[in-house]
Amino acid sequence: MPVLNERAYLERAVQSVLEQELDGPAEVVLALGPSTDGTDEIAERLAATDPRVRLIANPEADIPVGLNLAIRAAIHPTIVRVDAHSELEPGYTRRALATLAATRAANVGGVMRADGRTPFQRAVARAYNSPIGLGGGAYHSGGAAGPAESAYLGVMRRAVLDEVGLFDETIRRGEDWELNLRIRRAGYRVWFDPALAVTYWPRERWSRLARQFRSTGTWRGELVRRYGRRNSLRFFAPPALVLLVLIALVVGLLQTTGVLAGTAALAASVVYLPLVAYALLVLGYACSRRAGPGVRERLWTLVVIPTMHLAWGSGFLIGAARGARENVDTSRLDRNTPLP
Image 1 (cartoon, one colour):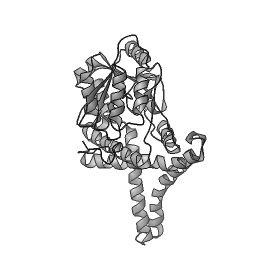
Image 2: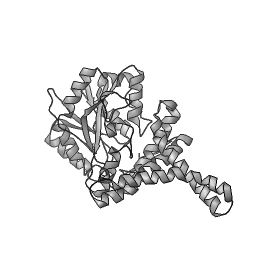
Image 3: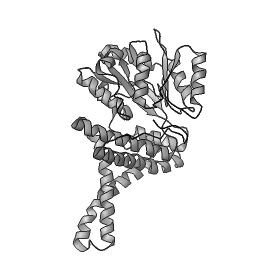
Image 4: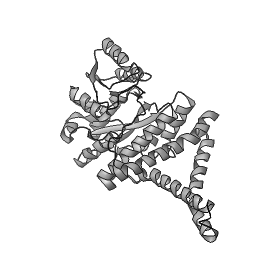
């Protein structure tokens, strides 16, 4: 479990792991980044009260670096990746191990069940779980069990990880997708099991959500530069939306200034149609019970979904055009947290 500024979530995340029922021995390895919110004190208390909890330092703060440090420090043949912003449901690990054995897969993952504690966070969670929000990936919206492109978090065979070279430390976001690509290219199976579920707590503020999605989109653009068509078509929808918005703004400016007039202006107005359809889709979803029972959740939905799409899409275009370079997801960094 890579950990950085998770004071509000770490204890419950670790407890959900320690409460898993297993037939054999287990340990919980926390790779601690340079937190500034008191997270380390909570981690030290957890380690002092349960010998299964081990702490290692991850001064670079990057997720793939922390994961590799934790995997190398681990002593058992199966690796269960856990996020400090998540909670494993009861029976998760036992079920995953059984699925891993039954399917002879190298990596098994399940459903990310996003949840929230505030109206904003619940609106984000519902968007995560909706095809209108993130969509596409089975681990967001569910589906039938079977071979998968990637796995959320993942329960992995250590021997396969060692064979393919662990996580790529040059990739700060999307490292799981890239690892699963190498696992599949090595001839192993990645498996989705909808009976596996993990509770995930999204970002709590709009600014953090926007920064997270912009960084994630930027790194997806980098992955497209590296791996091209191996990326699913669904990744290209948000950047297409951003391009449509930019084109519509240019057309609107030309129409307003009179550069486009008459038949030409009318023909150019076609660019607004998909944006109107998109706005109606988001509005229709926000007005439905799928967006939540409360008025505040539904109002936040009108902000959350476009923020996800436009932040991710703009980041994607930047990453695809010039690469991710040293892009860092700052959505969990406090003002005094040292950047990696």
